[in-house]
Length: 183
Image (cartoon, rainbow, N blue to C red; front, side, top):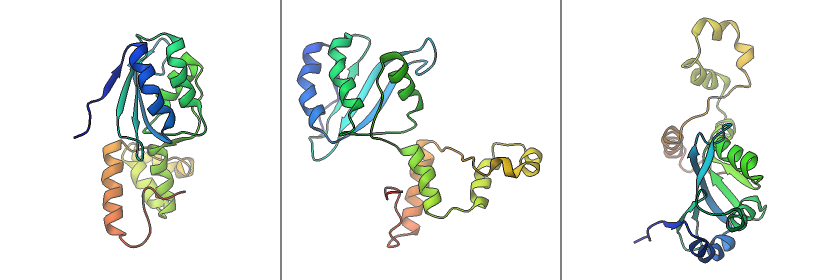
């Protein structure tokens, strides 16, 4: 059974967690806060999950309770080009970290953007791309201005991404096409 998430809300707990986080080559990242990434918003929590071959563990770092000096090693990990950070729709996470804390994320894989890239790699034609967009745009405007939408892509939610790629993977078994393939 996997251990419960470790809440790092004191310097001592965070200091004890740092060696595992610093040794992990890939971390799953998610941030939470009040109006995260917006002017006047506040980052409250950073969740980091380790990946194999490190012991799998989830760390919830209480940014609101910890001083900047205690958080700096975490910020260094997030800035490191040697650690892959995997997240889903990290726009607001990045904004809060960068604008509020001066942390520039490096070596990031945003699964939402990988979804768009994988559609292109799988050869989704413009017809499929337009079909996704049409659901959200007025028919008349869309059809009169199709050229405006040629480089626009609908971003899918996590559940939709998973469902689509599981279905695609089942349909293409043995073809070498995979959601996790390199672009």
